[in-house]
Amino acid sequence: MTTDCSNHVLTVCVTFSARVGILYFLNVTRLSLRMATPEPAIMEKRSFVVITGVGRGLGRSIASKFVEKLPLSSLFVFLSPSDTGQESLVSELLTSRPGVRIRTQTFDQGEMDQNIFDNIFVDILKNDNLESHEFDQVIIVHNSAIVGDVTKWTWDLTEVTSLVRLFDVNIVGMILLNSSFLKTFSDVSSRIIVNVTSGNAIRPYKTMSTYCAAKAARDMFFRVLSSEDPTIRVLTYSPGHVDTDMLTYVRDNTIDKDLADKIRAAYTEGRVVTGDASADRLMAILEKNTFENASYVAFADPL
Image (cartoon, rainbow, N blue to C red; front, side):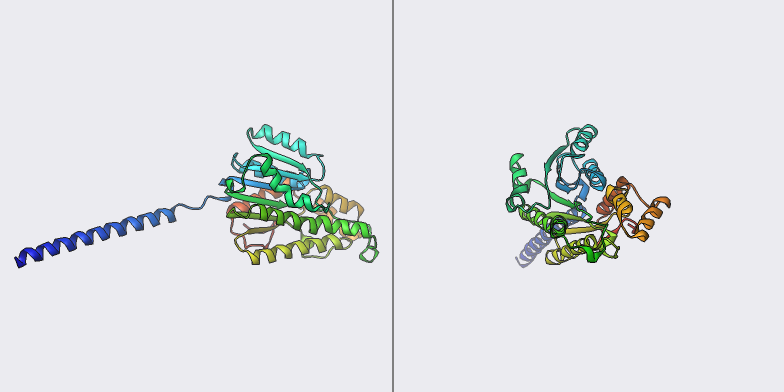
């Protein structure tokens, strides 16, 4: 009797141990499978993408690259002060990528209308019968900016209207649009902000004091935002010397001869890049996704 009982107990213990072992194995396997399944890359997620200043220059190139790379299930929103250049871009993209969904809106970032900022993204979603949680990821590219008057030295900046306009477009409107974006998509776990900055944010250029100040302020704004919520991915991207109307305007109109000569030299020496080249670099930085949050990343920096 004793032997039979011992054998029975032994059998039960072995059976119990085997079951525990099997359960342990299954749990480890499940965990391993979860760990082996990586988070989809940025360019693989269904995204709601907002890009400002799309009508021309760098913004046009950035918009084209995002449309080219992100899934067709994404929705792209182009915001520009006028339709000039924006509609032709949309026509090109619809031809090159049939089925892509693009919405355009005339949007003046310097127009201080509370109702517009509060409802811009809510209305876009409503018009398409969409909910914010339907997207895996949301991206906003803050590209819109104005350079200001380069025909004056800093001490000659005395006109209220032009100064207020510059800071409304470059800082106040950008902050309000950004806050509206984050508020509308607060339930989306993956949120990415691309702050298009400039060397002007870290170096002083004569006759460009207000533009330099605005770019530096934007960079610090996003550094603070990133420190407050590290889950928001922030890329502060300096696109290099891009061949745009803004660059040629500064070259042809600044009263600082040294600055004009430096820009001419950049053209002559081949240091001015196309919008497409700079946008390609931006895509590569995002795809690698190893940049330090809200840190300054320049076009020429190694990946």
